[in-house]
Length: 432
Image (cartoon, rainbow, N blue to C red; front, side, top):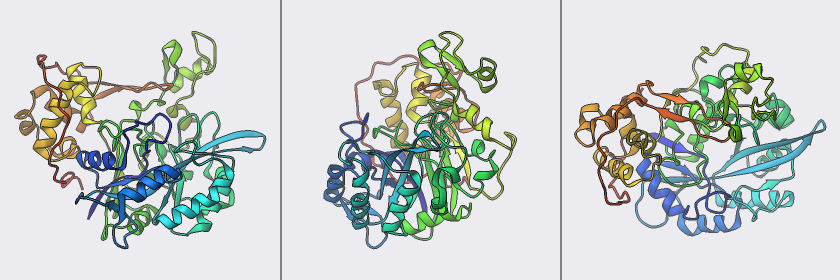
């Protein structure tokens, strides 16, 4: 069975998250995206956990959950993200972690242990005064079925390899609890190819998730994991991650890492964006204001890498680069926003015709798309699919910009319409 999973999202009690981010909306938009497994996010927050209990029901003994009402094909997995802040060799370290668990009772026991390290009700992603190793010890002491891995491993702040408060190795971060770490989350600004450059990461599975704060299709599922499993269950998913082989964990869906907000080194206030070589030339000091630059992920990877950029890790799950359909359409139309009426109109037409967004992005033939929307939009989808689109790298909190070189169709005035397609799960049939 094919499982397409986004394992790291947030509910509405997390900072900078849509107030409408409910379990029902997450399920609705996950289906439109083409996901069939999505994390609940934030089970450490008491109000969010109550909503999870009220709206989801166990899916038999699978360790997964389904919407209590209706017959949605979407399954949920209990997840949360926590922030740990602690001292290590006289330096303050700030690392985010994703936790997965199969049962509500176990989630509640995790919460009981973690509440002594910080307030769980202050934020959906709580800040805990505990070391990374002790966090893992607490989580795994509750149940060996739990899984924990570092979130968005390379972002400058709050990550295991972050330039400002991270580590150089997994072992330094997790100490004697490293034995329980089986995976790393690449984050938007890096992809597997960048991580393969570090031989010391070979034993870790590379997972990709959206870390989304809204349910809109340009956020949820923008990165995801594709499995081929015998059974749709928690243990099959986590087992495939631990095994780290391409037989069950087929590949990840990645945005182009240049699209991420921290790919290149730069200084947003001064509109300065620099490649690693250029940043080093300036001594990582902004040439405009003379203040320290925010070191980008590409430069940080370059510092720790012991392999060339062309290295391919044999036997590891592969990956494919995509960008959200809404972002592609918006770029073609020159609308500047993926939420305009014109973008929604074209998005609706394509999803209604081909079943879900992934089906459009990966499988839909050019000629068939051109019968539904204007040819430049269809051409742009294929251009991104084939890796022929360019992205101006993001930096210091600024997203990268897609460059297509495709002329936009004539502007048409459209009435607003929110998508309500009847989605049939289909996508990636012929990819492997």
